[in-house]
Structure formats: structure tokens, C-alpha cells
Length: 514
Image (cartoon, rainbow, N blue to C red; front, side):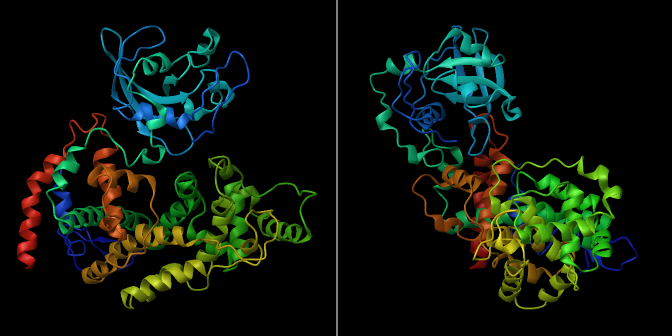
């Protein structure tokens, strides 16, 4: 595919790559580019010093998050008045309850930013194990229902203590019974976001067009970044690194990518000689995840499996000893099916086949788009290993039913976020890319998709607006461009004004298409 300023791959290849300037592959992307850019159970304490609270911490989360519930006359434990400029982003994963909050504290209204942790009692900070958890190192606001004892406050020395009990009890219109827990954090918000007000004047088709334009812009940016990596590292290594990062998902994405750099694809293939077991031994050894000593609890098959890995790994151990210490794995809270030890087996089978993965991609790209997507999804789900396909963990019990090494959710993410951008960066015809955009496998909802959809379209919107993967990609891009770094609670967000200015562009496009 000819394009202005095309890049050529190193190693003397003649393939040219697209720069995506005015690219026909993503026709709607310019429309978007024109826009500026833990739950706890009920706590009933028996100890005399800990008063009973017949609700959950989630009730307190809702109070803090919702301006309609949160008291306006809050003070710190030391008596300083405070104003909540931004309550923080509701964290749905491990770590503090709200991230990146901004408060104005004291008569001088000094601006303090940091994370928020919420408990029923101040002593819960220690009881829940936060004191030694580095994820809580940026907590600057400790919000509790009860004031607790004075010595409890020293547990979070860098945080302002905020107590809700007295201020909530002083409000005759407040009741915890009136809080609909299921409506938070996505479906309820006291102040209507300005972007939602503007989008009410859009037709359903125009709303979908906004999302799809943002989705194309997101995938176009991915393709541009991949084109740069291809020019620097070669098309096979660039694809290998991106797939590995996708297998790591959020928590281990960087570790997987780093592993792919420490053990390049050419080296992995040369040393494993198309043997998935040898490739797995190399990946596990370099990753530092291969057990050093046998365990008495291992069954016979596990002992044989581990022995086969060490038969491959021992000759490479000295060469890669220093690599393992540079990889930082996060294994707490990872579901067994998503554990790196299983995902690396999927990578071993994917990249040690006789026919290189990138060659199979090129072959499949010549068929009709629905079949191309089907080939890819079937290939990922068809990866099998005689040992790990029947075990959730590296040393777990054997199961009767097989468990996919790469499940359909991860496979869909790789197809949309890696394979299609890589294909575009390799110079695929624009028409084929545009067709593929409409056939992308749909990934499940996640917190970002839900939150952004509720902000844009309100509580009672129809999910059909983003039933296509391209629209879901658009929701993620809008969140990252506008919502993620907005600390003004939408007051200074440029997105609503941009939507107003560009509505005429969308209407003109519709008239032209008619």
C-alpha cells in the first residue's frame, strides 16, 4: 500500500508501511481527531469500644461519591473546614477506594490531592492490612463513619481524618435505607454531565457515529504506534511483543512485554526448535516463574512435567539468570485461569509452531472478513497442551474438562487491539480494514465502558448504542482523552463544547450520505 512518508522495515525488507495521514482505512477517525483533546460485608462489632454499624462500607462509598448524599459542611478531625473539589475516581479493583481526589482544606483553602480510603472505624486501616500495602501509599484522606480512639489516627499519619457520623445524623432528610447500592458508581450521579446534556440533542445514529469515530481514532493510534515498532524491530518481533503484553492484561502487561524483549522471538524460535514444551521452559525460566525445588504434593504427572521443563532449562539457566530479577510480577488477586504460568503456555504454543504466527495472519487476511475473524478466534481457542489444558494452576489438580489456554475474552482483545492495528500497519488495503472494523469480536463490558456510557447517555440509555466493538473502543478512548485526567468534575472539560461545534459536521456527513 503506497502512502506518504512510508516507513520501511529493517533487515532489508521491501514491505512499506502506512503513516495514516488522511488514511482511508479509518475514514471516521478524523471526525474524532478534530475534537480537542472492594466490597465489605455488614460490620457488627461485639467489642465495647467499636460501635455497631448495620450497613456496609459500600454505603459510605456512595455517600462520599454522590454530592447529593455527601454533607456540605465537612470538617477534618482537627476541625478544619473542607470542600470536595473532586471526590476521586471510584476504584473497582484492589487498592484505595477512590483515586486522585482533590480537596480544599482549612481557612486558606489549600489544595490537597491524593487517594481516599473509607472505613467504618479508623482502626479498620490496620485490621484490613493497609498499613504495609504499598498500593495505599498515596492515601491522603481517611474517611470513617465513627471517630474512633485517638491512637487510631496515628495509623495513617499523612492523611486528613474525616468523620461522617455527626454530620450525617444532623441531616433529617438522610437515611442509609434510601441508598440504592446497585445504582453506584455508574448509574447514579447527582449532577448531569454537560456532555450528556449535549448528546441528548443527537439522534441515536449520531451518537453511535461519535463512538465509532472515537473507536477508529483509538485503533488508528494503535496502528501508528505499531508502525513505528515495526520499523524499529521488524514486523514479527513487534507483533510478538504486543501479543505478549495483551496476554499480561492490566496487572502483568509490562512484565510480559519486558519478557518478550529479554527473550526475543528469533531467539525463542531458534532455541526451542518448534517444540512448545521447550519454548515454555524458556519463557518460564527467563520469567523467573519456574519452581526451583520439587514438592511432595506434586503428583506423578506434575513431577514428569517439571522434569521435562528443567531438562530444557538447565542449559540456558546461566545465560538468563540476571533476567528474572528484572521482571516484576503481580500475582495477588489474579484468577487461576489468567495466571502468567498458563498464559505463557498459550504464548509458547502460539509462537513455536512450524508456521510462524505472522505468516498465518497474512494467509487468513486474504479470506473474507467474517472468516478471517473466525479463523483467528478458533486458532486461539484451539491452543492445547497435554498438561496445562487440564489444570488451572501449574501444579494444580487434573480436571476432567479442558480449560482454554487463551480464553475467548482475551482472544477478542488480541484480535481488536493487536492483530487489526498490526495488519493496518503492514499496509493492508483500506477497504479490508474498514470491513474488519465492523466485524471485530465484542469484548465484555468493563468498568470504563460502563462508567463512560452512563456519563454520556444517562442511566436509562440503551446498550445497543455500544453493542459493536468499535463503539466500545470509542467509549474507552473518550474516557482516556477527557474523563481520565479531568479533576474539575466536568466543569472545565472541553468535550461538551467540542460536541456542540461538531454536531453540524456529523449532520452534514449524514446529508451527504443520503
